[in-house]
Length: 353
Image 1 (cartoon, rainbow, N blue to C red):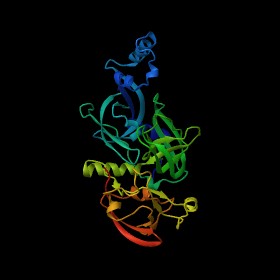
Image 2 (image 1 turned 45 degrees about the vertical axis):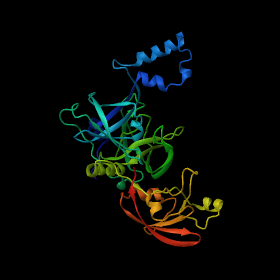
Image 3 (image 1 turned 135 degrees about the horizontal axis):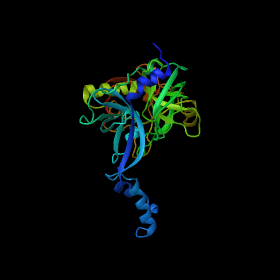
Protein backbone atom coordinates (compact mmCIF):
# COMPACT_ATOMS: atom_id res chain seq x y z
CA UNK A 1 0.00 0.00 0.00
CA UNK A 2 1.54 3.28 -1.12
CA UNK A 3 1.44 5.84 1.68
CA UNK A 4 1.01 9.58 1.25
CA UNK A 5 1.72 12.60 3.40
CA UNK A 6 -1.12 14.07 5.44
CA UNK A 7 -1.36 17.21 3.24
CA UNK A 8 -1.53 15.00 0.13
CA UNK A 9 -4.32 12.88 1.62
CA UNK A 10 -6.29 15.90 2.78
CA UNK A 11 -5.90 17.72 -0.53
CA UNK A 12 -7.20 14.69 -2.45
CA UNK A 13 -10.03 13.83 -0.03
CA UNK A 14 -11.43 17.22 0.91
CA UNK A 15 -13.36 17.89 -2.34
CA UNK A 16 -15.39 14.70 -1.73
CA UNK A 17 -16.23 15.45 1.93
CA UNK A 18 -19.51 17.29 2.48
CA UNK A 19 -21.33 19.02 5.31
CA UNK A 20 -24.96 18.13 5.96
CA UNK A 21 -27.19 20.80 7.48
CA UNK A 22 -30.39 19.82 9.26
CA UNK A 23 -33.28 22.29 9.08
CA UNK A 24 -36.91 22.33 10.19
CA UNK A 25 -39.85 24.63 9.63
CA UNK A 26 -40.52 27.19 12.33
CA UNK A 27 -44.01 25.87 12.99
CA UNK A 28 -42.70 22.31 13.48
CA UNK A 29 -40.15 23.52 16.03
CA UNK A 30 -42.83 25.44 17.93
CA UNK A 31 -45.02 22.31 18.08
CA UNK A 32 -42.17 20.23 19.52
CA UNK A 33 -40.98 22.70 22.17
CA UNK A 34 -42.34 22.08 25.69
CA UNK A 35 -45.00 24.55 26.85
CA UNK A 36 -42.63 25.95 29.47
CA UNK A 37 -40.68 27.53 26.60
CA UNK A 38 -43.76 29.67 25.98
CA UNK A 39 -45.06 30.37 29.50
CA UNK A 40 -47.25 33.29 28.51
CA UNK A 41 -48.91 32.47 25.23
CA UNK A 42 -50.58 35.85 24.97
CA UNK A 43 -47.95 37.78 26.92
CA UNK A 44 -44.83 39.69 25.99
CA UNK A 45 -42.46 36.89 27.01
CA UNK A 46 -44.10 34.37 24.67
CA UNK A 47 -44.08 36.95 21.89
CA UNK A 48 -40.42 37.66 22.49
CA UNK A 49 -39.51 33.97 22.35
CA UNK A 50 -41.44 33.51 19.12
CA UNK A 51 -39.79 36.61 17.67
CA UNK A 52 -36.36 35.14 18.49
CA UNK A 53 -37.21 31.94 16.61
CA UNK A 54 -38.51 33.92 13.64
CA UNK A 55 -35.23 35.84 13.43
CA UNK A 56 -33.42 32.51 13.16
CA UNK A 57 -35.58 31.39 10.23
CA UNK A 58 -34.54 31.95 6.62
CA UNK A 59 -36.78 33.39 3.91
CA UNK A 60 -38.45 29.99 3.52
CA UNK A 61 -39.28 29.73 7.23
CA UNK A 62 -36.58 27.11 7.90
CA UNK A 63 -34.32 27.08 10.96
CA UNK A 64 -31.02 25.21 11.02
CA UNK A 65 -31.05 22.87 14.02
CA UNK A 66 -27.95 20.75 13.54
CA UNK A 67 -25.35 19.35 11.22
CA UNK A 68 -23.24 16.37 10.32
CA UNK A 69 -20.80 15.16 7.73
CA UNK A 70 -20.71 12.78 4.79
CA UNK A 71 -18.66 11.84 1.76
CA UNK A 72 -19.35 11.18 -1.91
CA UNK A 73 -18.68 7.62 -3.06
CA UNK A 74 -20.15 7.65 -6.57
CA UNK A 75 -20.14 10.17 -9.39
CA UNK A 76 -23.93 9.96 -9.67
CA UNK A 77 -24.17 11.77 -6.33
CA UNK A 78 -24.28 8.93 -3.79
CA UNK A 79 -23.26 10.01 -0.27
CA UNK A 80 -22.56 7.95 2.83
CA UNK A 81 -23.28 9.35 6.29
CA UNK A 82 -24.58 8.16 9.68
CA UNK A 83 -28.18 7.09 10.12
CA UNK A 84 -28.47 9.24 13.24
CA UNK A 85 -27.53 12.35 11.23
CA UNK A 86 -30.68 12.03 9.09
CA UNK A 87 -32.95 10.46 11.74
CA UNK A 88 -35.66 13.15 11.92
CA UNK A 89 -38.39 12.44 9.32
CA UNK A 90 -39.72 16.01 9.61
CA UNK A 91 -36.38 17.68 8.91
CA UNK A 92 -34.86 18.70 5.60
CA UNK A 93 -31.25 17.91 4.76
CA UNK A 94 -28.99 20.06 2.62
CA UNK A 95 -25.53 19.03 1.44
CA UNK A 96 -22.85 21.71 1.23
CA UNK A 97 -19.85 20.76 -0.89
CA UNK A 98 -16.29 21.83 -0.27
CA UNK A 99 -16.68 24.61 -2.86
CA UNK A 100 -19.80 25.92 -1.03
CA UNK A 101 -22.30 24.60 -3.59
CA UNK A 102 -25.56 23.56 -1.96
CA UNK A 103 -27.52 20.47 -3.00
CA UNK A 104 -30.94 19.12 -2.15
CA UNK A 105 -30.89 15.44 -1.19
CA UNK A 106 -33.10 12.41 -0.96
CA UNK A 107 -32.62 9.58 1.53
CA UNK A 108 -32.43 6.33 -0.41
CA UNK A 109 -31.53 3.88 2.37
CA UNK A 110 -31.14 3.57 6.12
CA UNK A 111 -29.32 0.53 7.46
CA UNK A 112 -31.67 -0.92 10.12
CA UNK A 113 -28.77 -2.38 12.14
CA UNK A 114 -25.66 -0.28 11.54
CA UNK A 115 -25.51 3.49 11.96
CA UNK A 116 -25.22 3.97 8.19
CA UNK A 117 -27.38 5.92 5.76
CA UNK A 118 -27.10 6.54 2.03
CA UNK A 119 -28.21 9.77 0.38
CA UNK A 120 -28.42 10.88 -3.22
CA UNK A 121 -28.09 14.42 -4.55
CA UNK A 122 -31.02 15.61 -6.63
CA UNK A 123 -29.94 15.18 -10.23
CA UNK A 124 -31.13 18.67 -11.15
CA UNK A 125 -28.81 20.23 -8.58
CA UNK A 126 -25.41 18.97 -9.67
CA UNK A 127 -23.81 19.57 -13.02
CA UNK A 128 -20.46 18.22 -14.09
CA UNK A 129 -18.06 15.91 -12.36
CA UNK A 130 -18.26 15.15 -8.64
CA UNK A 131 -15.19 14.22 -6.62
CA UNK A 132 -15.37 10.74 -5.14
CA UNK A 133 -13.56 9.13 -2.19
CA UNK A 134 -12.11 5.64 -2.79
CA UNK A 135 -13.22 2.98 -0.33
CA UNK A 136 -10.75 0.66 1.33
CA UNK A 137 -11.41 -2.40 3.48
CA UNK A 138 -11.73 -2.46 7.25
CA UNK A 139 -10.50 -6.08 7.22
CA UNK A 140 -6.98 -4.82 6.57
CA UNK A 141 -6.90 -2.31 9.44
CA UNK A 142 -4.00 -2.76 11.85
CA UNK A 143 -3.70 -1.65 15.46
CA UNK A 144 -1.46 1.41 15.64
CA UNK A 145 -1.65 2.39 11.98
CA UNK A 146 -1.99 6.13 11.25
CA UNK A 147 -5.37 7.56 10.25
CA UNK A 148 -7.01 10.89 9.40
CA UNK A 149 -10.54 12.05 10.26
CA UNK A 150 -12.31 14.80 8.32
CA UNK A 151 -15.65 16.40 9.11
CA UNK A 152 -17.89 19.30 10.06
CA UNK A 153 -16.73 19.67 13.65
CA UNK A 154 -19.40 20.88 16.10
CA UNK A 155 -21.53 21.82 13.09
CA UNK A 156 -19.52 25.04 12.91
CA UNK A 157 -16.02 24.29 11.68
CA UNK A 158 -16.25 22.74 8.24
CA UNK A 159 -13.36 20.80 6.75
CA UNK A 160 -11.79 20.08 10.14
CA UNK A 161 -8.90 17.62 9.92
CA UNK A 162 -7.50 15.56 12.79
CA UNK A 163 -4.89 12.82 12.78
CA UNK A 164 -4.07 9.90 15.04
CA UNK A 165 -3.77 6.15 15.11
CA UNK A 166 -6.01 3.10 15.34
CA UNK A 167 -6.27 2.64 19.12
CA UNK A 168 -8.47 -0.45 19.20
CA UNK A 169 -10.33 -2.93 17.01
CA UNK A 170 -13.66 -4.73 17.33
CA UNK A 171 -14.81 -2.45 20.12
CA UNK A 172 -18.35 -2.64 21.52
CA UNK A 173 -20.31 0.27 22.98
CA UNK A 174 -23.90 0.84 24.02
CA UNK A 175 -25.39 3.84 22.28
CA UNK A 176 -28.63 5.34 21.04
CA UNK A 177 -28.34 5.55 17.24
CA UNK A 178 -31.10 8.18 17.00
CA UNK A 179 -33.54 9.88 19.42
CA UNK A 180 -36.40 7.49 18.58
CA UNK A 181 -34.46 4.24 18.88
CA UNK A 182 -33.69 2.21 22.00
CA UNK A 183 -30.18 1.96 23.39
CA UNK A 184 -28.41 -0.81 21.49
CA UNK A 185 -25.02 -2.43 21.40
CA UNK A 186 -22.81 -1.36 18.51
CA UNK A 187 -20.11 -3.95 17.85
CA UNK A 188 -17.03 -4.30 15.72
CA UNK A 189 -16.18 -0.59 15.89
CA UNK A 190 -12.79 0.94 15.13
CA UNK A 191 -11.40 2.99 18.02
CA UNK A 192 -9.18 5.98 17.30
CA UNK A 193 -7.45 8.74 19.25
CA UNK A 194 -8.00 11.27 16.45
CA UNK A 195 -10.20 14.14 17.62
CA UNK A 196 -13.84 13.40 16.72
CA UNK A 197 -16.48 15.88 17.84
CA UNK A 198 -20.25 16.27 17.41
CA UNK A 199 -20.76 17.25 13.78
CA UNK A 200 -17.98 14.92 12.64
CA UNK A 201 -20.56 12.14 12.53
CA UNK A 202 -20.76 10.62 9.07
CA UNK A 203 -17.36 11.87 7.95
CA UNK A 204 -14.62 9.59 6.61
CA UNK A 205 -11.82 7.91 8.54
CA UNK A 206 -8.93 7.58 6.09
CA UNK A 207 -5.84 5.39 6.07
CA UNK A 208 -2.33 6.39 4.95
CA UNK A 209 -3.23 5.59 1.33
CA UNK A 210 -6.15 8.02 1.41
CA UNK A 211 -8.84 5.31 1.33
CA UNK A 212 -11.91 5.28 3.59
CA UNK A 213 -11.70 2.56 6.24
CA UNK A 214 -14.43 3.82 8.56
CA UNK A 215 -17.33 6.21 9.12
CA UNK A 216 -16.88 8.45 12.16
CA UNK A 217 -19.84 7.83 14.43
CA UNK A 218 -19.41 8.23 18.19
CA UNK A 219 -17.45 9.77 21.01
CA UNK A 220 -17.33 9.05 24.73
CA UNK A 221 -18.40 12.14 26.65
CA UNK A 222 -16.07 13.01 29.50
CA UNK A 223 -13.17 11.11 27.95
CA UNK A 224 -10.31 12.41 25.85
CA UNK A 225 -8.95 10.91 22.64
CA UNK A 226 -11.55 8.13 22.41
CA UNK A 227 -13.64 8.06 19.26
CA UNK A 228 -15.27 5.32 17.23
CA UNK A 229 -15.91 4.62 13.57
CA UNK A 230 -18.08 2.07 11.80
CA UNK A 231 -15.97 -0.25 9.60
CA UNK A 232 -16.45 0.72 5.97
CA UNK A 233 -17.20 -2.89 5.01
CA UNK A 234 -20.69 -2.39 6.51
CA UNK A 235 -21.31 0.38 3.98
CA UNK A 236 -19.80 -1.78 1.21
CA UNK A 237 -22.48 -4.41 1.84
CA UNK A 238 -25.24 -1.78 1.92
CA UNK A 239 -24.11 -0.34 -1.41
CA UNK A 240 -24.03 -3.80 -2.98
CA UNK A 241 -27.56 -4.50 -1.72
CA UNK A 242 -28.77 -1.26 -3.27
CA UNK A 243 -27.28 -2.22 -6.63
CA UNK A 244 -28.73 -5.74 -6.56
CA UNK A 245 -32.10 -5.24 -4.89
CA UNK A 246 -32.77 -1.52 -4.75
CA UNK A 247 -32.83 -1.66 -0.93
CA UNK A 248 -30.71 -2.77 2.02
CA UNK A 249 -31.45 -6.39 2.95
CA UNK A 250 -30.54 -7.47 6.48
CA UNK A 251 -31.02 -11.02 7.80
CA UNK A 252 -33.57 -11.81 10.50
CA UNK A 253 -33.36 -14.74 12.93
CA UNK A 254 -36.23 -13.67 15.18
CA UNK A 255 -35.03 -14.38 18.71
CA UNK A 256 -34.22 -12.36 21.80
CA UNK A 257 -31.29 -13.58 23.84
CA UNK A 258 -28.57 -12.94 26.39
CA UNK A 259 -25.00 -13.91 25.61
CA UNK A 260 -23.76 -16.19 28.37
CA UNK A 261 -20.52 -15.59 30.27
CA UNK A 262 -19.24 -16.85 33.61
CA UNK A 263 -21.11 -14.12 35.47
CA UNK A 264 -24.50 -14.90 33.86
CA UNK A 265 -23.92 -18.63 34.28
CA UNK A 266 -23.44 -18.18 38.04
CA UNK A 267 -26.33 -15.74 38.51
CA UNK A 268 -28.86 -17.78 36.53
CA UNK A 269 -27.46 -21.22 37.44
CA UNK A 270 -27.05 -22.15 33.78
CA UNK A 271 -25.54 -25.43 32.57
CA UNK A 272 -23.13 -23.72 30.13
CA UNK A 273 -20.52 -20.97 30.37
CA UNK A 274 -21.05 -19.90 26.74
CA UNK A 275 -23.85 -19.62 24.23
CA UNK A 276 -26.97 -17.48 23.81
CA UNK A 277 -29.86 -17.93 26.25
CA UNK A 278 -33.18 -17.42 24.43
CA UNK A 279 -35.31 -15.34 26.79
CA UNK A 280 -38.17 -12.87 26.66
CA UNK A 281 -37.78 -9.22 27.63
CA UNK A 282 -41.42 -8.91 28.74
CA UNK A 283 -44.80 -10.58 28.10
CA UNK A 284 -45.09 -8.41 24.99
CA UNK A 285 -41.54 -9.23 23.83
CA UNK A 286 -41.23 -13.04 23.62
CA UNK A 287 -37.89 -14.79 23.31
CA UNK A 288 -38.93 -16.35 20.02
CA UNK A 289 -40.94 -14.04 17.77
CA UNK A 290 -43.86 -15.89 16.15
CA UNK A 291 -43.62 -16.45 12.41
CA UNK A 292 -39.89 -15.72 12.20
CA UNK A 293 -37.16 -18.16 11.10
CA UNK A 294 -36.31 -18.99 14.73
CA UNK A 295 -39.90 -19.98 15.45
CA UNK A 296 -40.23 -21.96 12.22
CA UNK A 297 -37.04 -23.89 13.08
CA UNK A 298 -38.50 -24.87 16.46
CA UNK A 299 -36.29 -22.78 18.76
CA UNK A 300 -37.93 -22.38 22.17
CA UNK A 301 -37.64 -20.06 25.12
CA UNK A 302 -34.87 -21.07 27.57
CA UNK A 303 -32.98 -22.89 24.81
CA UNK A 304 -29.25 -22.19 24.84
CA UNK A 305 -27.74 -21.79 21.37
CA UNK A 306 -24.25 -23.22 21.83
CA UNK A 307 -22.88 -23.06 18.29
CA UNK A 308 -23.58 -21.61 14.87
CA UNK A 309 -22.13 -23.41 11.86
CA UNK A 310 -19.75 -25.27 14.16
CA UNK A 311 -18.39 -22.17 15.93
CA UNK A 312 -19.10 -21.56 19.63
CA UNK A 313 -21.25 -18.57 20.61
CA UNK A 314 -19.21 -16.43 23.01
CA UNK A 315 -18.90 -12.82 24.14
CA UNK A 316 -16.35 -12.38 21.33
CA UNK A 317 -18.50 -14.16 18.73
CA UNK A 318 -22.11 -13.28 19.42
CA UNK A 319 -25.16 -14.02 17.32
CA UNK A 320 -25.15 -10.34 16.34
CA UNK A 321 -21.59 -10.74 15.04
CA UNK A 322 -22.53 -13.83 13.07
CA UNK A 323 -25.61 -12.23 11.49
CA UNK A 324 -23.58 -9.18 10.45
CA UNK A 325 -21.70 -11.42 7.98
CA UNK A 326 -24.81 -13.22 6.70
CA UNK A 327 -27.37 -12.49 4.03
CA UNK A 328 -31.13 -12.92 4.03
CA UNK A 329 -31.91 -16.46 2.75
CA UNK A 330 -28.67 -17.92 4.18
CA UNK A 331 -29.10 -21.19 6.10
CA UNK A 332 -27.52 -21.55 9.56
CA UNK A 333 -26.85 -24.76 11.46
CA UNK A 334 -27.46 -24.16 15.17
CA UNK A 335 -26.54 -26.47 18.04
CA UNK A 336 -29.01 -26.11 20.91
CA UNK A 337 -28.99 -27.20 24.54
CA UNK A 338 -32.51 -27.94 25.81
CA UNK A 339 -33.33 -29.61 29.12
CA UNK A 340 -29.83 -31.09 29.32
CA UNK A 341 -29.86 -32.53 25.80
CA UNK A 342 -28.28 -31.14 22.65
CA UNK A 343 -29.96 -31.00 19.27
CA UNK A 344 -29.17 -29.47 15.89
CA UNK A 345 -31.57 -27.37 13.84
CA UNK A 346 -31.36 -25.68 10.44
CA UNK A 347 -32.59 -22.09 10.18
CA UNK A 348 -33.18 -20.24 6.92
CA UNK A 349 -32.84 -16.53 7.60
CA UNK A 350 -35.45 -14.13 6.23
CA UNK A 351 -35.23 -10.43 5.40
CA UNK A 352 -35.63 -7.93 8.22
CA UNK A 353 -38.48 -5.54 7.42
